[in-house]
Length: 222
Ligand SMILES: N[C@@H](CCC(=O)N[C@@H](CS)C(=O)NCC(=O)O)C(=O)O
Image 1 (cartoon, rainbow, N blue to C red):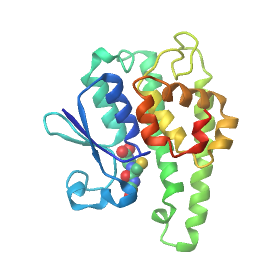
Image 2: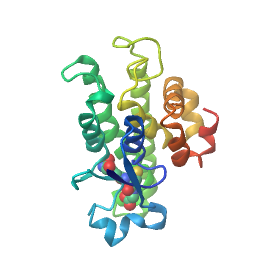
Image 3: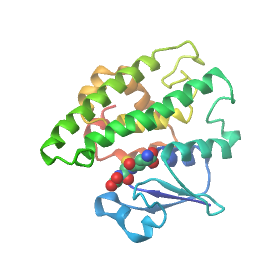
Image 4: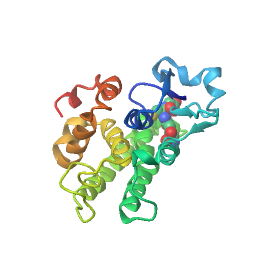
């Protein structure tokens, strides 16, 4: 049994969505970051960095880092085919945009959400936040372009690989749901909006999409 330490609307969404897609047995452990659950000693013993998500594998191994968790789940359930075969161009595209999301865009989101952590000058926090928002917007322009590249597409469809759902899709959709200006973002990014909608509507994901993001009115009209 997997144990996912989660909090609503956080980086726990991507592993949560994949566990649901796979149909794996898992238990959710609420680590509500709004209530400081990530800073409690019992959680710091799991992830000393005090961030969610964390995943306890069935053998008791602790994993942190959303990207690593996603890749571990893909490897552990090859029959779910959540990534194309190793070495393929299609897998390369998924890995490229997963890493871009986890390393560049996630970090830009954190700068816009926690600007005070990125400067020791309290007066500079607002400028850090604005720069983080600009980086988020720049990164989404690149993803919007990538979603329009149909050279590797398997059929018409909304996902990074066209009609084929992969682990990259819930990861990117999660990052999209965090955008600091959702109405404007969805307006100027029709392909991203379509991706978010398609992920949100997947039968296995829909209930947990609501668990994570129902509090965001701008996502209601996807
Ligand atoms: N690199 C980490 C980042 C995790 C992260 O920053 N999680 C946020 C929620 S999305 C968090 O725990 N924030 C609480 C805090 O940093 O105090 C990952 O990909 O898992």
